[in-house]
Length: 176
Ligand SMILES: Cc1cc2nc3c(=O)[nH]c(=O)nc-3n(C[C@H](O)[C@H](O)[C@H](O)COP(=O)(O)O)c2cc1C
Image 1: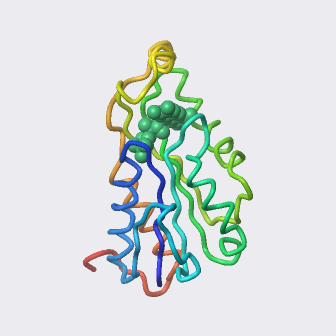
Image 2: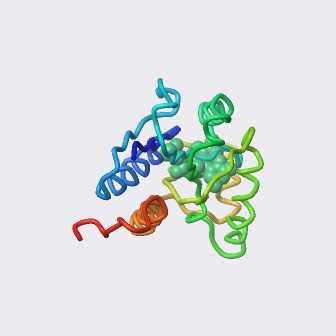
Image 3: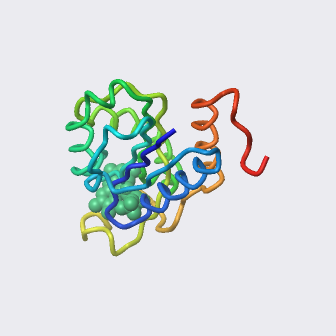
């Protein structure tokens, strides 16, 4: 199938996750286009959508929200998976519970949320120089850690699940 893995990123980690998802889906025989959402010219040419954005202020980036808004009709009649890239991995102690609460808020903040088959809130990369002074202070007060928290095995496993859902009878593990 023709799959779009569409992403929106501020600092690059979401693009790399999109590339890993796309590469994994391609191993199942799908034709995959990994592309920034604002650079998608003919959305109607894709049969499947895997869309993800970096999360700022518990919401997708504006260009990702625009894409969903502009294409809500099309997305309503195609299989859609969503992923959000935030910082659950950076949270420690009691703050970890915030991650469970954040996923539904991110979805609620999406305009015209299309029907979707799955949503994952994934951990990305958080670096000191990405935050404002106030942001750094809040980050420190919450006891968060800077770092690359991407779980590549979990990301690939999610791509495997998507592939399985798309073709339950034909799916074989990559290399199998
Ligand atoms: C200004 C700013 C605001 C952020 N707000 C959130 C947030 O509300 N929730 C969250 O889970 N992560 C938040 N993050 C963490 C990012 O989503 C995370 O670093 C992600 O990996 C960024 O993806 P990117 O590298 O593709 O831009 C924020 C990061 C920045 C720089």
